[in-house]
Amino acid sequence: MRVIRIDASSATILLTEAPAPKVRDRQTGEIAKDAVTGEALMTVGVVYIDEGESSLIQVTIPENGVTEGLTVGAPVSLPGLVARPWESVFNGQQRHGIAYRATAVAPGAFPMAQAG
Picture 1 (cartoon, rainbow, N blue to C red):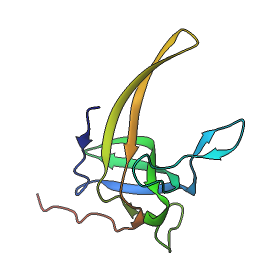
Picture 2 (picture 1 turned 60 degrees about the horizontal axis):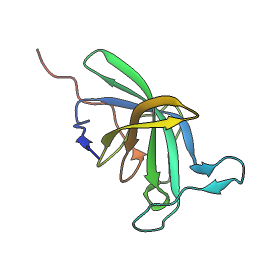
Picture 3 (picture 1 turned 180 degrees about the vertical axis):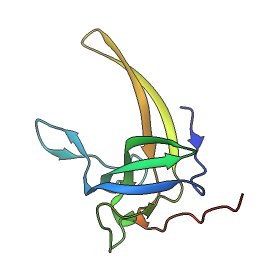
Picture 4 (picture 1 turned 135 degrees about the vertical axis):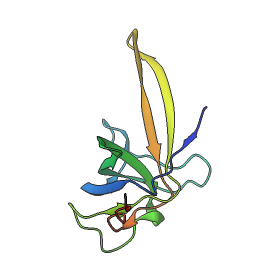
């Protein structure tokens, strides 16, 4: 699967949804786990703003990557942020999207304005 590393050093990333367990199966409530480590996964909602463009995205992080002191509406950092394009067929319907993953979510700061 193709992995795209994202340089977020100049981006503003604001927390829009507090960390919550990532549910693998909605019917059973089973929590998703990392395929390699077996660690429980969490998701956070953020607005990613860079170069005048903004996107609301959900980012998956390992449970141990959730840092204390997160506040909805405040800037956060997402070290190791990557994007993975995906596609599947469900009930005969082709679906596709981009899955985002980071190694952690931590309180961040607004990027420094560059002198022009």
